[in-house]
Image 1 (cartoon, one colour):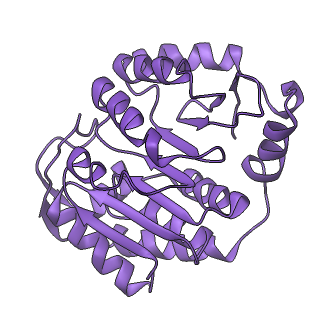
Image 2 (tube, one colour; image 1 turned 180 degrees about the horizontal axis):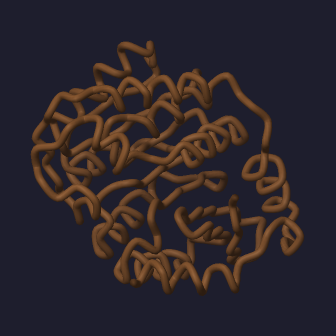
Length: 257
């Protein structure tokens, strides 16, 4: 019910490219978000997903966060995880375009799952260095095999709890951070604060499912008010956070078809 109410509010308050008065955001929306060009990377992402969708093997999933709204048992078919809990086709393609648009070279992902989103990140810039963290060993094992099968060699997959692994990454500087895991208010805010030292003026952090629950919406509201943040974009499913000091503080709600 929370998600439905938030979506209704979003529809009334959001805009498309015609309501944007920031050149940076206008360019991002028109040349990346709304880019209708077909890219060869999409074909590989689709094949990656197809292999998972046809994998009937059962694994034991260890949920360290809020868990899944659609899959409640620990024993799950890989195909079911891919079809019901994996990143959607449109969002995977958008993630690919975002990496391609910004030419991100140092990327961190929290929440590998089966690696569909990681595949999109990897293909968006094959020269990028990607660190992805997954808390479930069996899920990570499937993703690792997929990376090998599809020759995605620019990915470093770490199996650990997010908090523990983040503490070892404080000397890194990431162009792009994609957070798709845990989905709890306090944890999300803590990840944001812990990773601030790993960002620069041009960094982008993407938060998944910012209206997934009341707690996640509250976490998003806390993050956008942070003094380090100058620009945010709410696309309902994703929240984009920028740190561009040359830009005055602005918040946008933008519809993505």
